[in-house]
Image 1: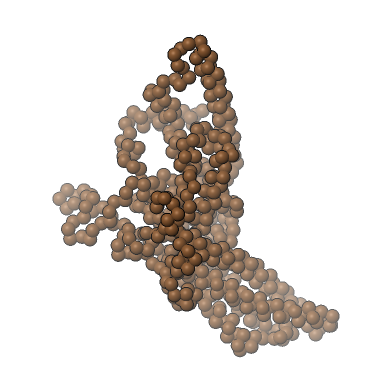
Image 2: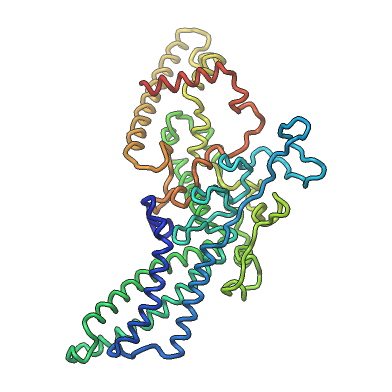
Length: 464
């Protein structure tokens, strides 16, 4: 969904975002001063030396902080590639003695990025614009052409602060001139500013007001995330987690999809508290990379950096938790749609396994009373199955009507209508992102006969 945070939704228009921002800064910053100076009837006249010095100093900081927000590297994870054995020419999991040690293999349950073919540390996401995993990814900002992340957040925040300060200063000067015009509204028109100058001042006022409104809202939401140590993506995950938990007790099994059985999914969707909220001052210090509050808004100050020397350790790789959860490392909470797809598996697989391994649960000793009970149970099961089929057909129609840039994926949207795709997250890389425990579920271990059977099932369903 298009918005101030996500930029234009039409693909290709985002290349004009940075030039548009530069034109907007120049228009509000320099055209306004030219207008005040060239129109002597716009009282109180041109800016004084003090007013001009303050306003142009703010403009310099706006340009500099915007440049840093656009050009600072959002961060990258350096994972050592597999080493090749000199004797066999094949890849070897262990490095030679002369090379630096490779990072330890990721344990079971570690998040895994399929696009980068590497472990995905906590709070990292694969950006579809930057084409790599970004540490503590907040969102991809089209107005800077860069990701707001662990390394770029301080520069992005300073840009918002100084831009809002410059807009407030400009708004003050515009308001002074509008108040004079309103006070002298009963005087003859030839004593006031000319019509072109009035039109220019009105246009300048509207653009300044609209920009200030949009950026002030963005500054408030950014400061809220800063104080709570969250990101836009994590706010999305928190809202999704709360929404599904609130609906578990009040919905039927059809809410979870055509498989019907919601008990397993509900058991895996227990309450998980956000683990990275460490306290007000600790959150602010962690995001800015220093506890010295005098440097937080200093334009020339830096920010935190991912540790490239020891992969797997340090900032960007490890995150302190508040201990509200019994087990660390549970964030992000599981996506119910992923659990549903994982539980349903391949089409026809569940029924085939049940037919081969389980006895019909409706039959007992074969007595007449048991037969009646079994018949009634089969009727109920058949009725529930037909209901699920009708619900699935309805979902398919809705999916076809709903336009998505990614194919066929059921995506949860927040209150603003955004998905993770809108924040720049490559959702293809987010699917099946956990390293399986053991190797029984990998396709390499599946017999060829089972793979052929799966393909026939898919082809048959497509033909139907």
